[in-house]
Length: 88
Image 1 (cartoon, rainbow, N blue to C red):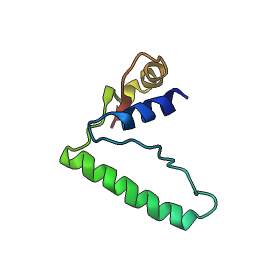
Image 2 (tube, rainbow, N blue to C red; image 1 turned 90 degrees about the vertical axis):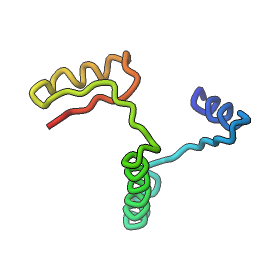
Image 3 (tube, helix red, strand yellow; image 1 turned 90 degrees about the horizontal axis):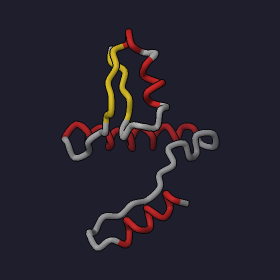
């Protein structure tokens, strides 16, 4: 309910921005070929926006693979604002 409230509030603001829910897994069992096509298109758009700087990923921490045990501990601590990334 909290997320729905945020979306409704965001859409009510006069700044012209709009928000909606997106279900990444919708249709993956019923229509796998269609799901795969839409997934590739959608992720392609996201990666394009990331590459040109329109969209910025919020990364809270980076860990090398030899410190892999610390990454899930930090990610599950609920103290971060962003994602934990493992580096090769």
